[in-house]
Image 1: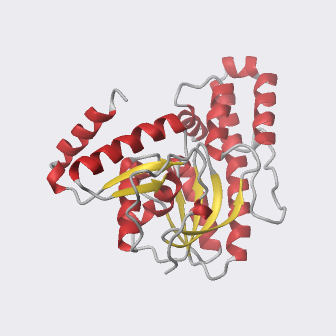
Image 2: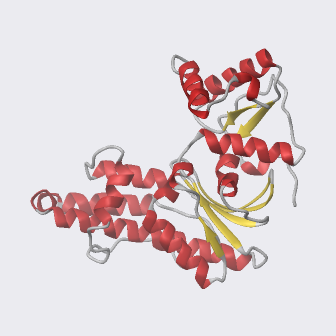
Length: 293
């Protein structure tokens, strides 16, 4: 509430625009922590009303789903691997607003698993980038860790067992890791390797179930992990599928992807939305109305 007006003014100043240059207002309407969603959506409604502009209420997950199309001409349909702090999903993107869920995490999201594991190890905040940096210096084979659901049919994920295994291993070797940083690097590398094994296994299942899909994109904060992106790219290559990852700046939550989703929706003839649209803490992509192209 205190910052949004100044942030908006700064963004417009850096873009070299003023209110009269805008064609519409895009605002996230969910899903997410409803306090933050309410602030942004209320500000967007006020701006749209005051300036007489159309309001486009954007699903946060659709912002991630369409973000790779900001910088690459990726045709529909494509496979979306949504990997963030709050969501882990494999989705077929048939068109703007048209999504088919193939699998999701049964417990923790991938990004959440990275963050919680980093916290257990006492790594500096934000934990996930630090864990990734440590993993680059480690041996991924030193500590045997499970990849839950590995080899099982379907496209769902599970990471709670891996998280527990890492915590147990860290506690058993904590004294050694305090004295020998290499042991900590090796545990980080072993954890990251276990996550990637699960991701590639589940993605392989999804791609085999959908032979019509010839493109795959990763979106969400975990997409900023270079090792994860590289392994998923190799996995897609084995299946004859082209892999796309957005620029790291567009992987984590950002305003550009929300604006882009609004552009895509308007181009598809969807919207604008009424000014009484309500914020939604939960809003599955499969609930959206859209078009298949």
